[in-house]
Image (cartoon, rainbow, N blue to C red; front, side, top):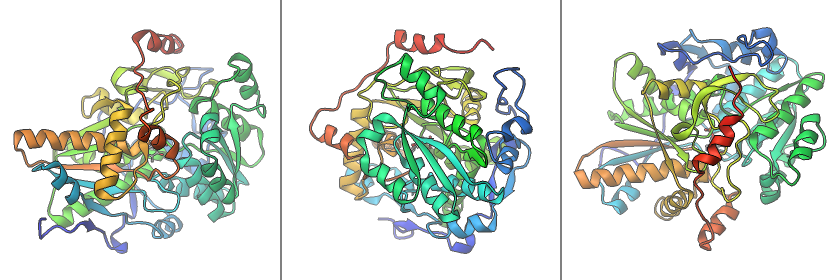
Length: 455
Ligand SMILES: Cc1ncc(COP(=O)(O)O)c(C=O)c1O
């Protein structure tokens, strides 16, 4: 153990960021704008304001201000669980016998269990400030729905959650946590919306997807007086809120007199990864420092590594604006044996642009390898990680093992986005040797690509 470096580095409360960092301000090639699906013109603030809260619309469209103030009420809430620790994984390093230094930024240290709370509290705050009655949303594995339910309870807002049916059925306790916080939870697709009824008629017996649940949540928000829709990933505003992860990491490394060489994050819609890398990416874009950034996605839902960079619908019902992103097509649904989270068909436009500009790398990993890493990490470091986070653990371990071969003393940082206590059905499958891998064939992917809009 390096005597100068503690296991956990915490910032003082007073050192917590006072502003979020907006990486788009430093990007030479800005992410492409959202398009109105009817006119194919960039969405205006008025059009977006029908669906989203006004201040969030401003943040979504803001590509010029590098720093945006974090309102005092949100900072007060953040203080309940932030700053989050930057942990030196000494035990893991020792077990791997690697000369690499491994750090993780642990975001599972709040009651909701993941980084999603960083944006949930911001979005609930702006909804409350606008005088709304409530918000609607979708949730897949349930981490976002849990975080948003908690944030809405704090501000006294109603919260309607459309939960992907397979998770609703597999994770009754996750659902009950949301209901305990006061949210209503509906399995999606449902017969409570036009789009849900249409999807059920076309695909009877479907287990649902994030794309379906988004369509339902948007329909309900737009049709209910005093409600707006909020989204837990993909959008620029969400990456902005998640930049607290990267800002704190950067400040903690500066405090330690260290600097990461490789920064790794799992990538679903891109919010934790975008938030973790943003301030470091800013330094790279401004020519102040260099880093390797690695996005890790499941081999069964490989939007960056095998997707197309194109305008696509953000949802299955095609009611949302079009986003230019790496995508598998809005009709793509990962194979039923996929248990490891990260099942969204597209990727944040900001991360898609950075990837297309070769400023970031991406790799895909198979779920049995992900759960092997999760189990190894739990046994060595003690934290039982979320399956999503375990994608980053897998690649952090792989990079550390490469250092063992070459003898390089690299410093690796990865995002440990959450805990996996509600994912025990997936862990059970893995422990019983019943988990399998499915990698979509080119033909499978071609079906998704066939549904891409002609823009
Ligand atoms: C714990 C955890 N990590 C990561 C993700 C991936 O989402 P994102 O790419 O938006 O960070 C999720 C998504 O549900 C999650 O629950």
